[in-house]
Image (cartoon, rainbow, N blue to C red; front, side, top):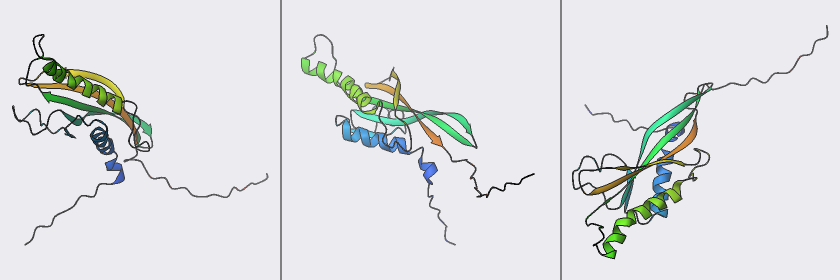
Length: 179
């Protein structure tokens, strides 16, 4: 007996949630050439010890949550919280006695983060799908190795009609009666 395989074909509504991530990845690859690795965050910096499967510096994209507002007729406004994790591997110090080359290399990550913000804040790759990205946070995350990690938070909104009830319009001819 042979196994039957099923291929999932996502609908346009299901792709609605994916589009911001595809657009962000493409934008960062195109506009921030200093990033050598841009991908979805699937744990590359968390589960691989001192040898994560990335190139440095990198940007990892993920969704940290979706806030939903009900609009009626099963239509929703989804506000998506997007996290861009920007990281590098620190291999030398930047103390006052370090060479200028070492110090400049250390501060390069800050220039990359500024460029990420410049390229994404106020931008949308698909204006008919989701609204402009808005930067809402930036945090440093401590790691127990030589990885420097910052998280830049963005939010964007989209109209979600996945559960909307289809409407049927019936043309009517007005009848006027005189009484």
